[in-house]
Image (cartoon, rainbow, N blue to C red):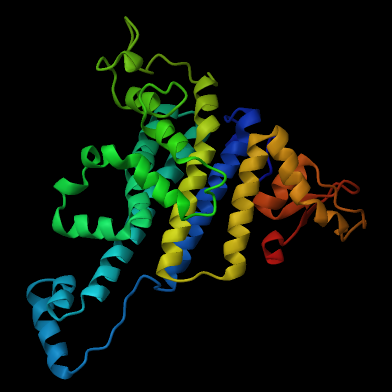
Length: 346
């Protein structure tokens, strides 16, 4: 597994353990792809709903309702329930994805600065709240909308959703292109099971609370406070985080992609490029057999020649990761870095 593919400037990676830098850059790649999609859809106003009134009387009635209530209520009163529903769902998607990505970005930057407790606090909301609501919205749009509009906020609390988390995650995962790569039960255990010592719940609870005594698996050790005496140069928490964070963010990024696709169809080539790059990226981060599989998938690119020295492209683990995450490679002959439009293939 390569240490870094230079997606992120080298000086920002100096505090990330060298063997986890590729995983960190992969997580940023997933964030950046989701953020790019959000910006593109917002710029194109893909979330905006347009409709024509059937006559002038309807337009006048709508304006009167909107002045006293709000546009959604006015649309429903005028018989435009389907359009009102689309507005509600689109607005929720845009706002929740934006909020989610802001938190993830700041968390990843905190990890670059060894502010690991702050990073965990920032990850808790997007990975246990936003992710679950976005999954519900994708996997069961009718159920989400009905509950949101008829029984909010009591019907959409985390305690209510607790009993159907696996169902929500499974339904959403089945609609993505990573259903054969990830496992809904694993995502559930990773994010929500307190007894899972390799998951996020214990880390989240200890990051938020100085003392935890409710459950034995979360209990603070005697004569201690959670994390405040932790050495900043210890790598064990980084190893725990990057063992599972790439998988969770891969799931989340594909849920986000599917929600935007529901809003407006993306370019077919861009869609395929994101699916292939994000999945191959995970295989390269996982290493060993999965890394070998990813390199094999890129074997057809060996016919590419360096524009400077005309050496054939050598698909090393480093070049495989660079091609997938940064659309570039390092020539084995002249050692120069060369751009390569990997997404253009699709």
